[in-house]
Amino acid sequence: MSLPSGLASYEFLRELIPSRDLPHYHHLRLVKDEKNLPTLAPDGVPQKNLLDIEAFLGKPGPIEIEVGCGKGTFMAAYCQNHPELPFVALEWEAEFAYHAAERMAKRPHLQHARVILGDAVPFLRDFLPENCAQAFHIYFPDPWPKKRHHKNRTMRPDFLELMRRVALHGALFYFGTDHAEYNESARELFAATPWLEMLEPDAQPTEGIQTNFEIKYRAEGRPIYRCVMKIR
Image (cartoon, rainbow, N blue to C red; front, side, top):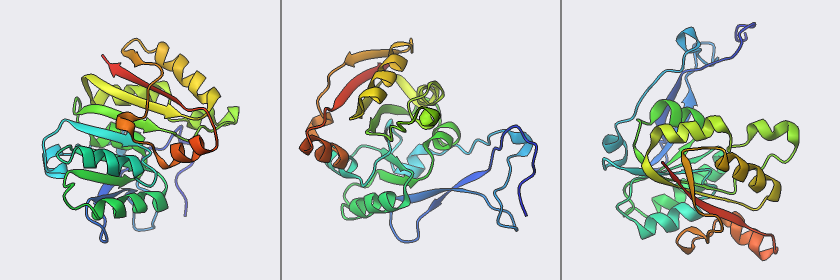
């Protein structure tokens, strides 16, 4: 069996499921039907399933969000510095997300941090309420270097608009990459986005914390490009 053909696009139902193995670890999954096929959203319209931030994180917010947390190096150190901070980290790779969740499980005093395995786009769009985030952290996202794959990059106008939807006025946006062309493309996008204000075009690692990728890249002598912006 297969999904119906001829549709201009496919929009599916999703659910946020807590892990049976690790506390504070959730899977953002497609809802499957009795034939184990993804369930199409009625009329092809995304279905809102907004979280109660306080019920989900144990505090009402505002929250901070990391997109692409990898193995959780930044998340663990940053949350250690801010143990009362409601923090959500998203990761697409299951192995990395599980490793990050294991690290947080070893720090039970960090009660308000969550790792979510899944796509950041539907999570920001359908699960987070508006005006709930005070900061975003996006460090060393996949640069998708081939031109035909640029559409897969995280830094796109539509993704920035999702960030804007959930951001508080004045929320901070921390960005970093080692890829020169991606940095140039992203900076052009940032400059063309009227509600983004560049605060630090040549920023240092946030609170001195380097990610796994950054530690590796700096050891290899690669240039690192970081900046900090404000969402107005």
